Picture (cartoon, rainbow, N blue to C red):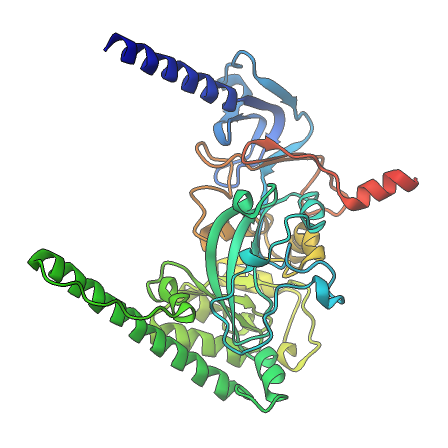
Length: 431
């Protein structure tokens, strides 16, 4: 018994030592802290303990812990890392070179089972260049070429493996209405060749998925009863991975992100959501401003991608630069996204452009931080400087939306990240 007690005590000491080593403390002091949720704090303090935020407040209300690493942020801005809720980062290296693209399974109009996490290139040069402008978290989406193009994941822009980077393995299922599916498959004399065909196929897919989920629910109930009665177990139904992908959508656990640019496509997406009681978010939304009040009343977020969309196609004839301001004024949950791979680095500048066309500054900051966190179901972990959340923190030498602003420091889940990229290394090499 005494030997056992000594062993347990030794294990407890070892564990406590491990925790102590892991719980390193960093104190960021002297800067203007912009927590997003809550008022800015001049001469503020943010304390990172391990991977979490441990304190946010005024400098005078905090006692410096012994052994802490102190970072002087005087004259600078401290805020949460940015969140880009629609990118192709890590799955598309060079858009014009097909061999470097793994974001588009262009073999069938319906590919719900494919998953961007399976295509992530952990050595992608995009990760480093994207985070240099302050982005710490991205949603990696499949390309919008198919009617149902697959599932997305949310990743932190730091890690040596896919598992280490994943923040949300299954973030959403993605649909695309309008030109991309009908042009791709209509040219092959294959459905869907029209917008009518798109909606018909979408309804058929959801109806089939509902039947599949109901079949499994009946089996699970039969299995439970047979176990209680001591009877022989029933045989399970066959698995269908395409239909499995719809489960979290039908239960409203995860959103269906629907690409819709033209007004009629936006309205079709809203009707579909009401008809099947699914939770959707609109992506693109070039003409969504026309029905901003209807979108707000439905509680549907808009991932405006991008704010610089021009009236350059049949789908975007009514696009306008002040769309973000119109959606915001109507009460829409507006999120600004890059919808890009290499150019995901432009995310903060896009918010600045939206501000120049009337979007209030506080709304622009929220559209890069807490709002995408809410849409993705991660607001309890990221999106603001709040005690207990993941320590995704950036320090900047100016306003985040200004092109000349430089991110000087970054932490992702409490780990200090080196802010270099292939571009800066080449500049250093050849200067």
